[in-house]
Image (tube, rainbow, N blue to C red; front, side, top):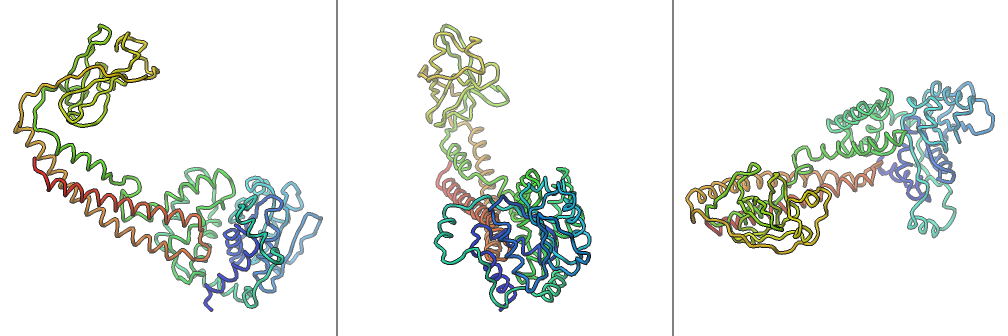
Length: 487
């Protein structure tokens, strides 16, 4: 049996009968094995004591020191213990607080587990041990209804701890594995992610000691080791994006930023896929407009930094100028023209209906007051129902104007070039995302994998892949449309 298979079966036995706690147990096991102290937080009944018993059972003949609420002297020789457990830790108790400090400082190779019902930021800060604790494991308050129903139908004592024979970790194995874990090398991706998370902590004034960074990095290496790798990979860092940082504020900010960091790393060879996906529909709209537009030269004025057709309408005996951008002529699109203040006139709606004849509808509320009325012009005014008002022709200076034809040809050439360049880029992106998806999927069954984050990352890659596929199809459609018609 391989080491990975053995640890997998061991973790399954530790999680049996404790639904929706699997990942927390995995983190606890990993921390205990490499000797990193952690704070196990949860309300009464959340499963803290049961998880601790399971973690102890994972280590063969482990010498355990448990310190509870009753007055209890801490032994002088802490090195004789493999695991030291503080149950229901209360930093308000000075003796207990002192004992925790002694265990953390003098415990040497002993794994320290601190359990309590106080929020991590309260317990660790008041206990003055925030820098000594590597991570926090916060248990959910409850389980889902589905998991509960499944649990209730499980025969036997679901709280009993059953570690298969030969699965528990001996002291010799633990020592040997920790030596091997040190030999695991950090990949560039893993090191980059750790560095970026450290930057986030620095930017937000979240103090994380060098000792803690070294400890967390050892955990990343341990994840790789138990999955049979001599070098870490990106997925080995996924636990850094969970609520291990002790404070709710830190957890939220780091988790959100961690997603951005990992997504940037995943898509580093496919720039723009996440933040600037290509809009194939907008390209098709541009092509349709260009091919269906006539070669007429219209009389226009430059207004608001673009060519506009000028109209004057009279509402309530008041003449009012309107400026319709030339880009809307001969389209089917509704739009608001500019008023004389160079703003979009929301109370007027125009449409050319594919011709050069502009249909104008106005807000029914201004029929009796006019467009220039200060009350009607108020930014807070609510537009009512639009009513048809007028159809205004556009003055054509010249049909089949050579300048317009040349301009359209130039635009078509630019679109052809865009289609070619974007097609090449999106095709490359598809290949990149195939590889990324394949690599992520290969880690799906990895030990200590954060399944929730894994599923999110995999779904994002698939969504981006589908978006690029759609964009390529739109590019092909635009290319074929241009080839089928001539100006």
